[in-house]
Length: 168
Image (cartoon, rainbow, N blue to C red; front, side):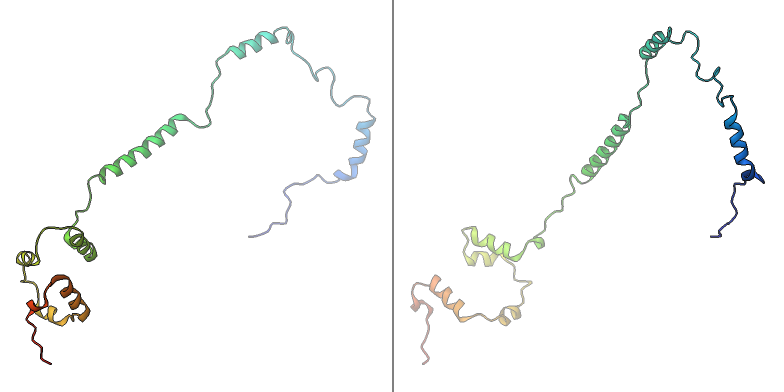
């Protein structure tokens, strides 16, 4: 930014040289600087008609300017309500349908454990298709001995029914 050293205000030449002389001349003059005849004059009959003029102005209907116009507030509130109504309307019946694949395996297991359908394991095996089951999946997953013993203790009353031959 370029700085301009010139001053925009100028005084006439020799102004300060003669300033003191001119000031003393005006102060020694007997004539006042403000004329008394026109200085603070009140119009004729001003105070006689003052009450009538004041009453007329007070009775006149004044225009009130609101700082917060109600119309703008109503318009903003209506637009916000319309946007909310449209948003709710568009999302009212857009629920996602649940599929069997959305369920967790633990939820399915808990459902079968907690509900008694009155079906035996043979009846359930008849209903479940085995077309998608790989026998290698069954053979590759090891069954622990503790699980086998627990199953036998719960489901078999007589061990002789198993027809286990002792090979010792």
